[in-house]
Image 1 (cartoon, one colour):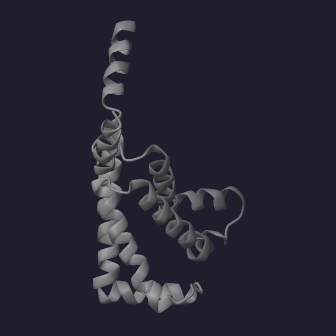
Image 2 (image 1 turned 120 degrees about the vertical axis):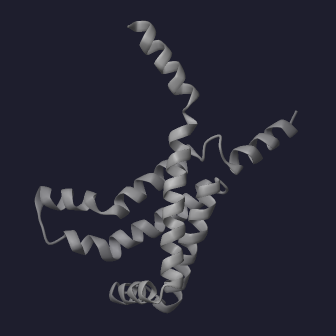
Image 3 (image 1 turned 90 degrees about the vertical axis):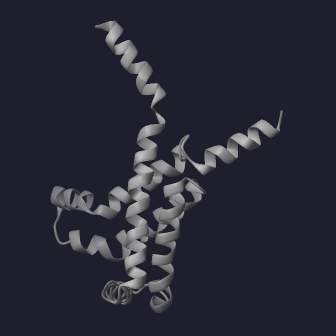
Length: 157
């Protein structure tokens, strides 16, 4: 039994890049699509603009184009693993802003543990945690950041 867990631990360490890669693919595709439809679907764009106006976001007309563009580009960069930490940080800030200015009001009507439970049901909270993790973990081995970093490391010798 000990041998089984020893081998399992070894194989898990060899595949440590896999969960980061799969997470990057999923969150990258999601934000590419989210940004795309907020930019190019008139109903989605109008809904975003209305939300930004009601949440008192400064310059809502500008931000209704800027934020989805950042989502689209940030999602694409995370997908390919280029400028991953920077993209994750920028998207994390957008998610925290969305939570604080608009989404928290949806769960604030409840108190106590229900408030906490409903807060953690917000998808923006999960996205924030993923971006926080990606910011610190980096993009993993299957990424442009890794390849560029490897070339820089090799050029030092």
